Image (tube, rainbow, N blue to C red; front, side, top):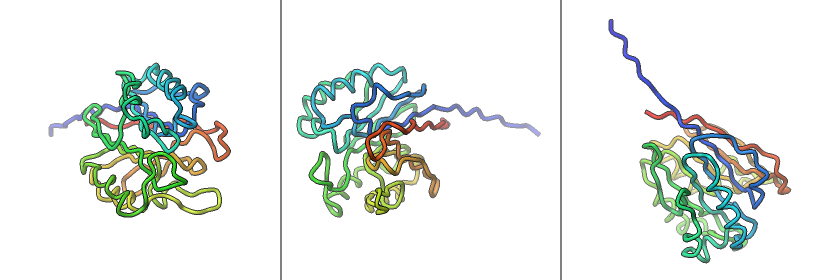
Length: 221
């Protein structure tokens, strides 16, 4: 009987988030792709943005992909100037997608309203319009805030994630990874219903740098 052998290669993915201008102190593992899921700055000032982008673009990873977060005000208030600052070897996603080695990736900085920070949207109909944009074929989803009930518990024990995001995730038949940050104290990784959820916040709830980048070997078919 003939035996068929199938070769399956892997991409090494590295996930970080919520570095808040402390990126220079992070031990970033080597890999093929690095994803940053927002809050790369303290307040989104131009000098903070430039410092982050210089650092990010110099990383050795072949692909460098990021979204903004609620602290990254310049990305929302001055999108044209912000866009001009992004180096050619860096991919920025804002309710948009890219394809990496045949893997569809979608990114959005949107999160539920929180004290009028950047990229805030009201829960319900307003925020659902953003989640409707996520293509059905998405395999890796980058969002700043978590879905409800998954790595979203704040220090007083309340889950604060987005219910509508959670519902949309369950509708994505090819989704393998949903990565985010925002809730520092909920750092970690968990798998549910075939989807690996990653909260890659690097800073803890007191904004101390104590968490590690999360690494994933992603199979390529």
